Length: 452
Image 1 (tube, rainbow, N blue to C red):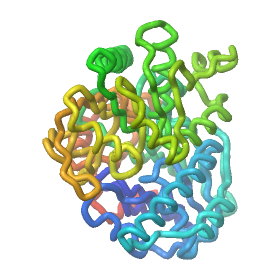
Image 2 (tube, helix red, strand yellow):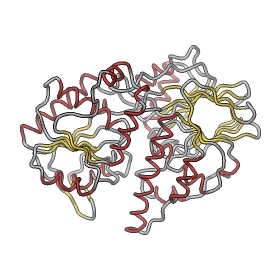
Image 3 (cartoon, rainbow, N blue to C red):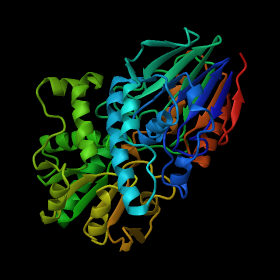
Image 4 (cartoon, one colour):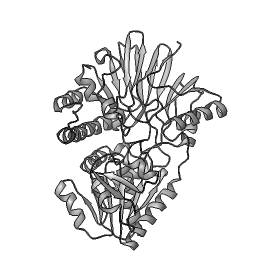
C-alpha cells in the first residue's frame, strides 16, 4: 500500500493525495495551487499520475485548494465517481462555475489559458456521488471502504476514513475551529493506523469565541464613530455565513448601531442559499433559530449586491458602512476595488479573518505592507489592518492535538500536511514529544510505503 503526496506538502494549497492498494487507486481531493509565484503554471502541468487509472475521487470539502482541479482531472481522462457529502457537491458546483468565470476573464485580459471549460465542469458535475455522514461507500468490489465524518470546517466538510488491506487510514481534510456559530463540533477521530492531518495553524493558538465576537462588535462600533469603512475579505463558504450570523445576533441584541452592511460577492450570496437549504447540518442553536422563523443571514441595513451595477452603487453610500467581499485572500474579486478606494483612508479598517497564502495581497497586508500594488497601481495603506485568527475556519494547534487524542487508541503514524513548513514541523514535534507518536512531514511528491 502506497500513499503519494502531490500537493499540500509543506504548503497549504493544492491538496492532492493518491492512495494505492494493490491494483486499486483512489484520489483524495484535487485542489488548485494558490498565491505563490508560478502557481498558475503549476496548475497547468500534467498530473503526476494517469487520471484514467484512478478508480474513485473523494472530496473532503468545497474549497478551491481541495476541489479546484477536479474538472481538469475529468478533462484529462478521469471517468470514475466523485464522492462527497451533499453540501460539498452543491457548493463545489458553484465554485467550479465561479472559477471558470474568473479564468475566462484572465484568459481575455492576460492570455492565461483557462484550466477547463463549461463542458468539463458539466462532466465533473455528472460524476458527483453525494453521500451522508456515517454512511459506508464501497468501491472496487468492496476492497476499499470509505466513511465520511463531520469535520466541522465548512458546511458538509468531512474527514474520511478508509478501510483497506486490514488497515485504517484517515484523511483529516481541513478541521474546523472550536465553538463556531453555525456548524456542529468536529466528530471524534476513530481508531486508525495512519492519520494524514492538516496543520494550517499547527504552530499557533486562536482567540476564543467571545473574544472574536467582541472584536467584531468593537470594530463595527469604531467604524461608525470614525465614519469609516470596515472591509472584511471573506471566503464565500462558511466565513461569510458565520460573520453574517454574528452580525445578526449583535444587531438583534442592540450591541451594534444600525449601519449599512453589504455582501458584495455573488458566490457568497449563492452559497448562503445552499446553507439555508441544508440547515439540517447546523448545530442545535442555529437549527433552532432557523426553525423558529429567524432569518439567520439577514439584519437591518443589509444589502446583497449580486450584480456589478449593484456593487458599484456601494461607492455612492456615504460612510460609515461595512463591506464583506471576496476573495478571502484578496487574490481577486470585488474586494480589490474596495481596497483601492479605502486602504488610503485612515478612518477605515481592514479585518483579515482567514489564512493568507504566501504571495497574495492579503499576506502582504497581514505582514504590514505600507503599499500594495492592485490593478497596476500602487495603493498606500493608511487604514488600520487587523487580523483575527479566531475567525479562521481552521483548527488551531490545541484543537488539532485534542482531536488526535480523541481516538480510542493513538495512530501508529501521523503524516502532517497542509501547512507552511514551520507550522507542519512544529505540530510534528508536538506529536512526537507530547503524544509519543511517530510523526512525519512529507515532502512534495514524496511516497510513503504503508505496511499492511
